[in-house]
Amino acid sequence: LAIWSSALSDAQVTTIYTTQAGASPSPVPTTEMDSSWAPYWTNVWGYWKLNEPASSTTAYDASGNNRSGTVGSAVTLGSAGKLVTAGSFDGTSNAKVSVSKTTTGLTAPTVMAWVKPTDFTTNRPIFYNKGDQALAATNGFFLDLLQTSGLLRLDLGGTSVSSTLAISSGSWT
Image (cartoon, rainbow, N blue to C red):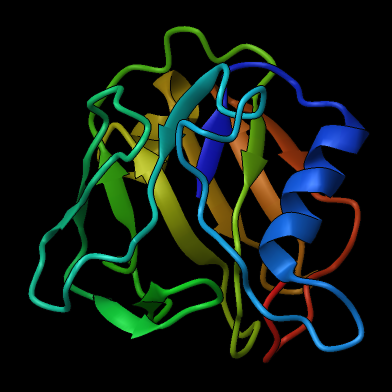
């Protein structure tokens, strides 16, 4: 999951996606982001690879901005991922990563994440700051996968925006 403090252009998002997804027709993951990805690294607010060992209770912020988070008890790190390893979220209220930092500097952010949902039986919490969804909705942010639509939703201080394309169950998107 990467969050930029400003909006990226469609071309920038496409470049990042195609670089990470690999070339068609047989997509092979190529690389994770790092500071060599200029200009895409500029304005990265936080970047959580979720590639820590299974025993870890911390999701480290690879952006260098010191926004590491606490992994909920229903998240398993070290699972097979799109690029390397990933976090597996079981969909319960403790299936989240919680970051306690303020959202200063996030007014028109860009959020990118590789997700592979298994079903849409409930709203799926993914990432929060301020500890939980209720607190995040009034003074922070949360990212979740919506139950009936399969859309990703980002709420920033009580204002929600959803993705325009539904995410398919069982495949990395």
